[in-house]
Length: 136
Image (cartoon, rainbow, N blue to C red; front, side, top):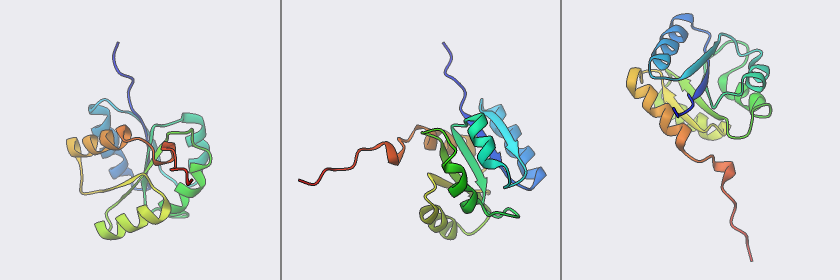
């Protein structure tokens, strides 16, 4: 039986970037949905139940880190949020940490490298799923 496709929701206001990433990930076997606005992401996450949400950080109306905070509450358990940006990588890393993202990827990462990174993030156990040590 074939492995189920990884469902990914890409949120980016830049249509060319959105189309490029959609074509790339579809070619690597991902089930891809796209959304061009930060508005409505929470509902979309709830109704489409993606495994991964690739969020552009620099999006009008609501930045990716704010969208993440809102959408996480609507997401099924196990959905992972990845910040995606052309920003400086150290800034992106800090923002991902501060916002509770499950990872970050620079927009300079494309093609097979992007697919591999998303697969790796998808396979990592969710941090929240790990039991916390009990103090005795």
